[in-house]
Image (cartoon, rainbow over all chains, first blue to last red; front, side):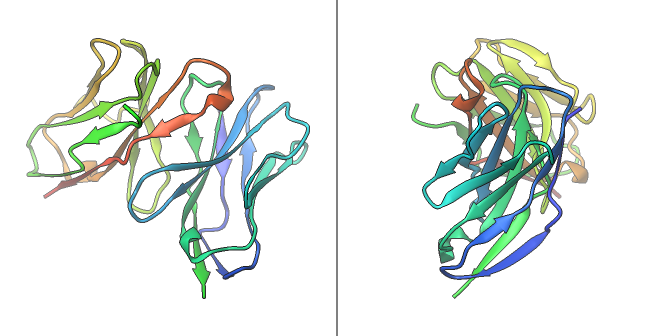
Length: 114
Length: 115
């Protein structure tokens, strides 16, 4: 069974600073994908970034990058140059294919301070 | 449509009442997923469909929960005899059959409050 662990219930970061949100995962599958989603107070799940298990390079999308360490089974999200609008819940998730359910962690609440 | 549409956005039900939550996925998306998200928690899987076939319903918490997708597009999650513990946000997501990085698109959810 797949499992996602997010150990930081809450994080604070100063505006314009970088922040790392931790995510570790457990799976016996060789092929899998890792996702990060942002959930603002309005409730929608916003896709941020994706990393495939066979991707050799860390994924990047604008200010978001994923620090993928396969041997350690970690997939940390790095947000650079934090903005006040980044304040939200962040969820790490995984799936073993595009057609099977995502498994989510419990999330990290990020608060950006001016 | 352009995104996944869920209705109603908010639902207040009296304990014991039946409710029906609707999800309209992105056109052409074969897979459809339902999740339950309790306050302050991550989404928990309920059930999923490929076209009209319900391939996994292992996450449904009791036989009061029932989901259908009769024509392989719109899906309805029905909760019978609602209980207070059913209060949560119910999220629907759809995905295109293909490589995993096609990703999943979520609707805005239905917030169910049972009083």
